[in-house]
Length: 160
Image (cartoon, rainbow, N blue to C red; front, top):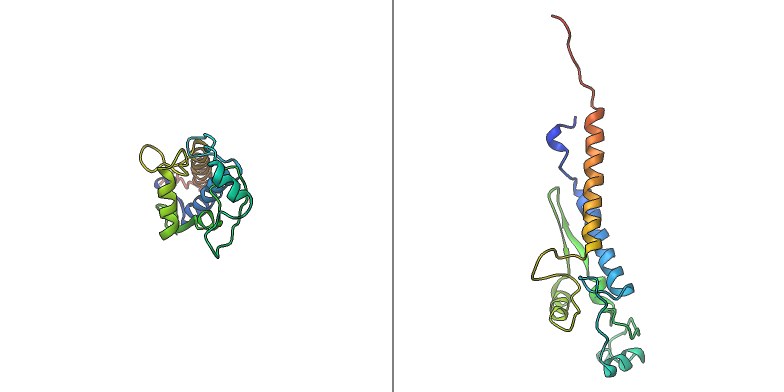
């Protein structure tokens, strides 16, 4: 039976789905929209790098180049954005992000031009649209719990 105090609680599945949804939204913003966390288009690559990337010659020797886009999409090998994943989901929170080398790449991009994929230093770590998604998911889950709570039969005893 759902109690009033259970309404603001979320399940582990809620947090996992929210984490995966945010990972996908960040990838879409970065790789398709070519925008940083502030919703601003990434600064152009240098002419030299754009030429190398466009011709498939920007990757390290022996590496496989996943993108030849000359529009900044933060995708060279494809491994960093693919490494963005949900790591842990509990009934209280979700942890997602990049591990190891890929975390270092995101961190180093943060200080280069306007290539901030997520906010690392101030305020909310996500773009406005991603913050809106968090809000929508939470409201939807709260409303589901409120409806469940309100459907719980209340037994009233009248008389002695």
